[in-house]
Length: 380
Image (cartoon, rainbow, N blue to C red):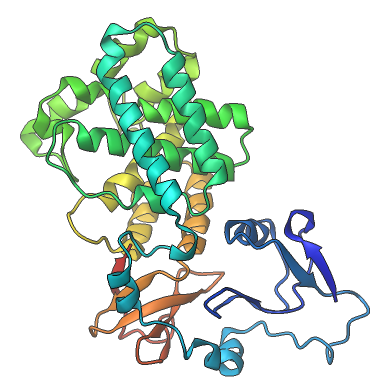
């Protein structure tokens, strides 16, 4: 075996020992062949170095454990001292989403950015200086790059019946998620910043609309649909004199256009929609699904809806890369099953959308095999 820094890992390297977190949970099993995604996961978990298998290592020296059933059999004792999920929920003042790496400092940064964006939106009609918006986009970009589990912070907010309050939170969430998607797609930093800029102002036209449109949650009433759709044109009218880059303008004007022509305002087809606008459209779809109802969302149902709703509307590569990120993100999330039991996600099947959970009474349940059980909600 050889110990290697995570920054020096290569695809194809083989893990020699189980990667176990501070709560004694198996994150990646011995024998896992590293991919770009799993290397990214190790960085997300802030693991500094791991042990790799060398060519001289024998199977007797390092026992490979690739199947989940074998991991459970050999390591179930590691879970005995875990605090039950409900106790964790009651002891935290913020959501339990990879809670070990959600920091209060990052929560404060999120709130500070939200306040600053509110000021910029209020003053945009009277200002011809785009530098504050550019600087805020750069700050969000840095936040996306340096904050582990960054979308966890966008899920913490609650619906507020205050004019423009939800617009500000939604705009920042979409900017963060868009930045994350752009980074996952491999765009260079300058491009990611441009996408974040477009995402940040994508709904800015809503500041001129009635509160019932600005503070909407989920679907729009049929009688309000035409007024709601006008926010795209209103937003462009607000920013067209600012001299923004063409890519940013197109992101704003096309963030509701879909590949199949079902979007608005121009019903554009795939080949005419700017790729940055597609990223923002998908991030907008995600944030709307998460916050369409008060209370805790069913994160796993949302993941399924994203794939269904995005089909034929959003570029497949965007859907796939974000779905893989969500699959990794939901590791350790606490959930409730349809039989009323609380459980924790401890494993995601790599090749299909299914999970293994550990209930508070110690049972390991593979949801791909037990069709009588499913997740009804998640504690985000």
